[in-house]
Image 1: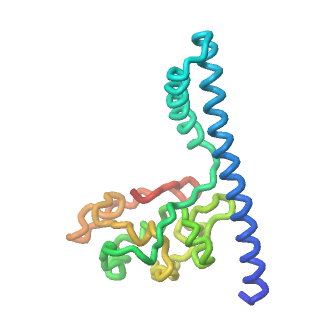
Image 2: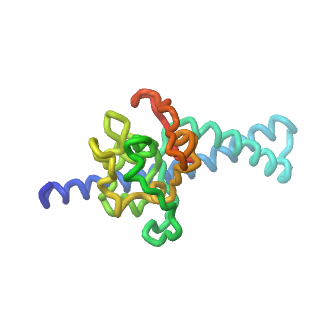
Image 3: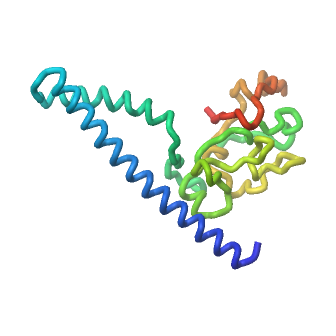
Length: 197
């Protein structure tokens, strides 16, 4: 990719990020307003008077209900702001010797990137599902080598990848020590939605 193309991509990425931040701020403000309005309306209808303690309790109740409702809607997701280069005591797994067994199934899981990842402009994200890690049509991360399954951006890999430990994940291994992989029960890529534990 030439310098001009990289500059355009960086500007487009920056523009998307700005729009998504505005959308996230607006959504958060609307969420808080909706909770308060619904709580006020329900309390007024239920008791005929506004009692601050009752309004507070009703607000908490409705907040829980609305949180569940919002989770089912499209949304911008960003991973917590953790410096991935400052992490220590990461899991030590000999992935290279196990890829032929596990088929790098961890690289088919979806998760949001952090703004650190986005700002580096190395790890790619899905434009239609900001800021989920980008995947190919075969369901694998776009940074997973199609033949070897090795990570092509290992030095810049996200926090989720750095912290993930497959050893006790029953989706990956029936017995890690004996090198017995779990059956591959993944759905076809179009219908798959998986997240690391």
